[in-house]
Image (cartoon, rainbow, N blue to C red; front, side, top):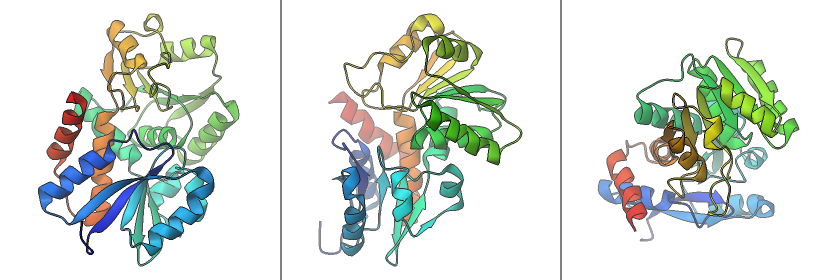
Length: 284
């Protein structure tokens, strides 16, 4: 690093598990850019002061992860139409001292889904587990990609219902519904779905139980887990036991990160280099 090094990073709490610094710094090095990407552990009550500090320190921008994707909205100067549409932010650009909120999660998820499966979401019945920032992005992107239906299940029924209300305001072609977080409702919802997506943080801890068991899954389903560490989560193990197509979260991590990279640098990132950096971290 030098006195001219451009700084970006990722804000979250906790943040030590993040692999984003590995892939972004590998991309910067490959392109010969004098930039560094660093983890920024920020507690919820520290968000306002952290944003002021990043602005004063000359950061170019940063990613946003759990638990700040929705909380940060009120502190930003402007939202892109996409971020406003989704109601959550995962990427912030700092331009002329102004904080501009973007969301690359939805497009990143869809690019990863298509890359991993060779399929689209058009006509698919989709069940999303969770109603936080990542769930919102995936839900809205699913409607944009022509999903036949989107059902949302969340431990807080009110939060899931709020997401469904927002979806109904923005789409009329896709059937949307909310499910209570009960064994019976989840079993029924999985039975109706072509694609099941975990957008909660369950699975990050090695002691987490699987959200669903193999007996409720089918071989013709696609099961996606947005959790990327560990690469094979308890849910994905159950999906494999059922013979379903199992898609981990590393692909989404790469593609949403690549879109953020373009926002900050104006350059297309070397996606293969970013993927290789994550692969080597898994090998370690």
